[in-house]
Length: 132
Length: 132
Length: 132
Image (cartoon, rainbow over all chains, first blue to last red; front, side, top):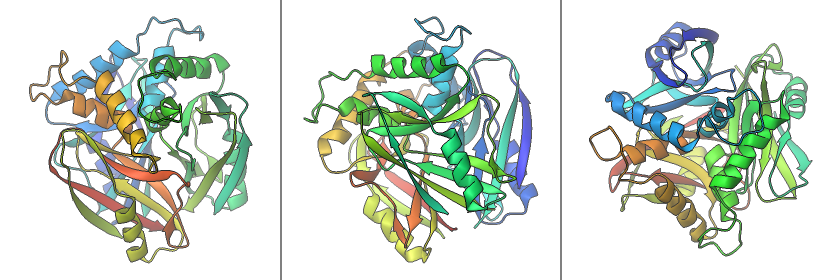
């Protein structure tokens, strides 16, 4: 099943926890065992898996990225968001999670994050669930 | 269907747009809905998705990588291409795109790039298309 | 088939070659053609594909990561392992390899590595093999 989710980001750079939304798509798909693929159809955003317990972890990752890939650099692209394109390729536009017993198989501390690098914006997340 | 593509790169580091080649494999596969997986069987190359409209974006990403992962560093590997191996793991050897109605599901600005980090060379790209 | 592997790491940061273990799971699965998905259910570890011939390559990648993402930085997360979380998202928690004739399709120099960034620990690796 292919599902399209809509999210609204509130800052230029931000990690939004979408674990529950992805889990709901898996339930809705009826797939018991297989793979769930999550994809952002944007070139200035990404998806990643990391700790969901302490919000300071996502802040540290975002601060690190913003520090190492500065918004104002000697870039050629004239739209002023080359840093966002670089961060998008660094983390990647898609990720896969195993599905077992109609649920995502994630570690205790893992959550799925939509990574906004050029917001705030209306964004899409595509989810495909494949049965084994 | 598993398909092997051949591409020739012309510089030591270069991003080559392979979107149309991947799209042709999807059409040829006969798969209507599912996933398309793209993989490079090389350790000094990668694949990534980013903007296909303005060629300055891929230049900015490549310049950034070349600046932050210098060719001449204090590396142990004696072949002189450790920077290429690092860049390969940073962007990744494989990526997945959703297939819908026998076509790739990509955002308006997204293209698929073969990332050469130790060319120029003859390179392979493997494409597997899985039906839902 | 979903399989759970257990590995023990011996250092804080370390790349462990798990290619043979993954290959064994593919054989055991009985899948002839399809995809093999490898996932770590941890937020301070990752998986990557890179050169398996010269062990200096993995050392160079690890040294580079440890140099650019220092353990002691101005992080908010109080557990002292924010660098490990950042490295986990940089390389990614999962990767996919094509399966052909009941074997992994890897390039001559490619191996699959479990990347430990906050060891030593007991770790898990999940492997799902999907038939085409």
